[in-house]
Length: 201
Image 1 (tube, rainbow, N blue to C red):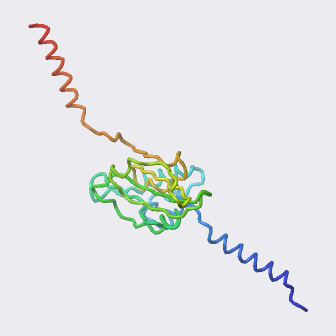
Image 2 (cartoon, rainbow, N blue to C red; image 1 turned 120 degrees about the vertical axis):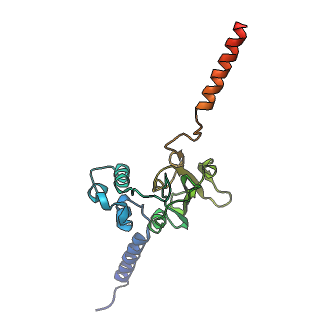
Image 3 (cartoon, helix red, strand yellow; image 1 turned 180 degrees about the vertical axis):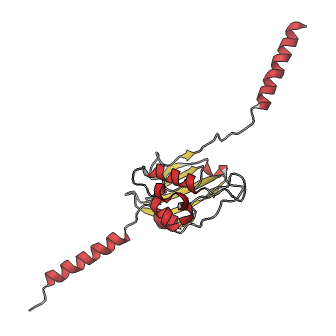
């Protein structure tokens, strides 16, 4: 029997298709967190792995259940962290399970992608407020890439990637200006007293 070139090409193409499918990036999910970071889901695995909850709700419940009482400082939090990872899965998969430095408050994500949406690089880290003041998407000059930046406040809140203007936001759980209201009240009261005294004299 003589070997068929058509059959050889068919086998080669199917092998290449399988390789490309395996190399295709995928998103990081709540199940990946539980699998790769067991401490995050150990106390509520059934809820963390629930198919009945939407992914965002499952992640929130999972993080609530797994919150450890002892943090290195009050309000301690964690972010996914990586520098120029190939995609979101690679970034989150290898992110160290450590608390952010005390002088930081937000989780930062910068996603560089092709115009087709395929990831080129992902950078995530813990940052202070100043690094979160210019979120959004922009086109990189001369390279034809799109760069989207987002910030969020909360324990490992930077799970997803920003891919457009809707995702590339600064999401906080508390007001950015957390000034105490008392000095303002005092100045209003003092001003009123001055006006009252001026009217009575």
